Image 1: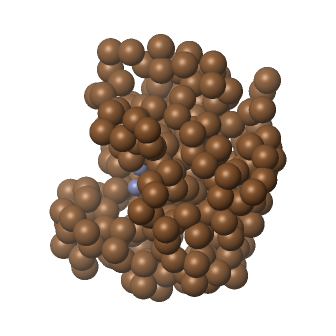
Image 2: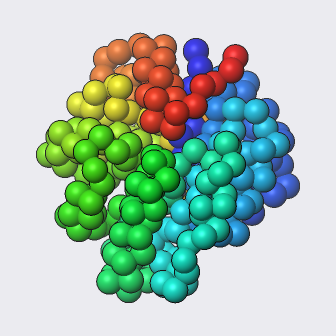
Length: 258
Ligand SMILES: [Zn+2]
Ligand SMILES: [Zn+2]
């Protein structure tokens, strides 16, 4: 069995002291690949530095909606530069977050639109963050040409939004939330999503799955998510692992060795 953590933040200072041990623990749990997300220039640079150190680790370069207000005048040249590195496999995070509103909504939309155009120009997959903003997010996503690879990371929509996402050919990723007994909306999405469109993620150090809720999350927890999805669907965990690993390789255009 081989699993991939399709979205984690190993650049986060929560991992400064024991990154090597985290990667080792992940391997012991058969999590053989990790893709680092990023939220601005410094995190994207650090995520790439870490990705270069480890085989089967990659990174993305983007501006999280929380940080949009700092990037309004930014020509985003740093993304073009980072994207030339073969270890940078997607543009993101990008999107809208109306839960925290750390940046004004019109600024979030402006920066999101520029990142969409950049991903299209660079012909790179896009990792989307959307929280309490799905209607506006889906309007923005229409700016992608048909067939552009789009991942709705940490998907929080219901089964109807899932259907819409599948009609557009998007991918979704699910994480620790599926293990929460009260997250019935997301658990229903996990039952219904076609496996060739599903990626698994921790979003580490955040969103720790049951029974470790409240502790730091790390890629070694991916099997807990895979096992829960297997139970919800009545399928075996090997199937979930094989299909989601293939979907992740397909989405990011990577190939895991070993
Ligand atoms: Zn996110
Ligand atoms: Zn994230």
